[in-house]
Image (cartoon, rainbow, N blue to C red):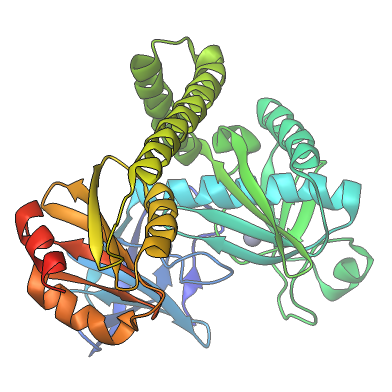
Length: 382
Ligand SMILES: [Zn+2]
């Protein structure tokens, strides 16, 4: 068994002796007599850092032995210095201790348990076995941040069975041996294997980001400490950019966006009205004396207006009627017929006009690259 030194969460450097070094999968697995490297567990990833100058890329545990996965081998028996990546570990401890802190307040008020904890690279989530609103979470967040300002001690202990049987503590597992208890003075008592900060002040800040329904309970996204600050900076950059684009003060951004959306809606409605009026005048001017196939040309109309024109034009022919709307590379089209089965004819039309598209026997739509004259000649030849 490796002597574990991570009960003192802020121990980032230590000396140890190499007990073994085996070739692993794309790495070496090094064991030591003692280690402050935290092995992956309880929702938290294994520590990274250096050992005797070689890189530790992950830390795992099996049967009480800590395995340091290194990129180079180390000599058995050598005395080595272990250095934990302080920035990575600090970030994880701020989030993990912060999670215990807010959980303490949630548990005290609602009695909910954290049934799933994930401390990822970019997000921290806790899954509660009960429903809680975002507003209620913000109230617990407020309590957590007050406890941070009070800088309450966080301690690690291994109570004996007798003490443990009388102790009220949160735990995900039943009947554990050597239960390790993390206590935030006056707030929370929880069984946990991970390294923690020595006081709540070092968490810096707890921020609830979002909450959503999850498996009958609630999944809560939080960030603590330096990660919360980074998130704040990210959001501030977004606000600044919006301020610039809208020429609005931050508190007026929502109003400005709402006004833009309203204006956009009105413009869209106006465009639709114009398109409809244009379609009306085209429909009124449709003429087909011989009831043969014929076509018409438009510009700037939407598909609804084109369909309306097609529905009227088709009544004037025993052949096919096409409406062609100018686009950048040619025309978009709707072709309709009451007598000719268009699904079978679509290929011929598309081949003749350099187009693609399809639809039903009554109506096909698509686009072509042919010019107006070519289209008129094709229709005249039908
Ligand atoms: Zn924990």
